[in-house]
Length: 486
Length: 111
Image (cartoon, rainbow over all chains, first blue to last red):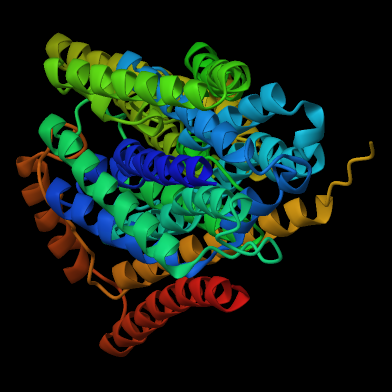
């Protein structure tokens, strides 16, 4: 029992460390876009993110219940073995998390945690130890569906934001006002992050407490001290992680416009909060990345850079099995060597953590290791410098081009008439030459205006504008015929 | 081994998130639009010019402020219409805040 208690203490310490790295890694998820658009000063953004993560951790415990009472069949596993397996799973998650962070590879802290736990349990107990139904419905499917959901919502929200504020008279549209709104939406993302990510650690600690009988297995609600410890740890991690972002001053972020950032953050916050309420353990990084890509596509003329998008998706897909493999290796030690295996795992974990920490201290903080995958995912969408016109803009431009062509036709006709009149009335050679020159110039301008009108017509989807253009063409032809007859 | 998946939960998440995000963005954008109609065009400058800001330079901000002031003067609306638009804008921002608050309260009370 004493050994089991010692292992549970180790699990709690390691879980809190994981919580800290989670906050450290994910600050940029909430604060990348407001810093990019200048909605918030980096220092304010980081402080706000830390505070709201703290508050968010107290709002709901549904995700914690999913982790502590669904993924692992704790009733079927020996109570002496389970804490060691959780410990091994945490080692897998932390190792994979820190490795990907150092190498700048896309990853997800949440999936690393689940991967580590599942890998360790599979090695320690076999398939009977895993509740595949819960894993599929609360972890795997949300992981696949949530980024897509967030992307679709962000796409629609961006279209709405741009559509409502668009002006066709060229006057200021006031879209910079979205910058103020971003202060609230990014705060919501930080709050949502607290409601989902802090709870995963609460769930792991609660599971460990249940296995040694320090908490009743009848209810999987985390104890108050667990909630407080996890909330403060993730807030501290978020605050310290944010300093890396401040040092890079947002370098490497994509060109995010305030309206786009506002829509992306609204979508991220809404998706995470709705999922947290139903106990879905999401990857907040993936949801925020999906929103950034979706909102980018919501801007006119945007295209997906499939290569970048594919690289990010591959990183996401790899996280679960890779963390699972590391967790499984750590669990093998426990299965083969028992308590000695746990000690070896603990020593290895300390060596890995200290080693990676020293390595990270040696490296200069750059956008490559300070900015999250969310910032990276912004590069998966390509925006044209000048967006193509909307249908309405096309129609307006077509009408303008037609009016200009009509004016030029009138000018050309007048200049021609004047040249003919001068010739007939015996005007001087210089006068006739000047009038002909003016007629030629007017004809050139007419040709240019017609080309412009034809181009706009090709773009226009309006039947009415096409009909007017056709009408204008007919009247133009008639005028030419009459001129020839004269 | 049969695995039961509650697909309706996914639909609920999608609908709730979609409605929430669309309401927030819609109300806020309408509020901004009405603010512009009321002749109070917001020109919100970046809080800090980090390296990431490529959207607006100092010179562009001054030009935008001047442009906004000029456009506000040329508004075709009467004073009463402008006031009505301003009240409408404030109402939209309040509704936006209410949507956020109700979302958070729903989660807290569900818990």
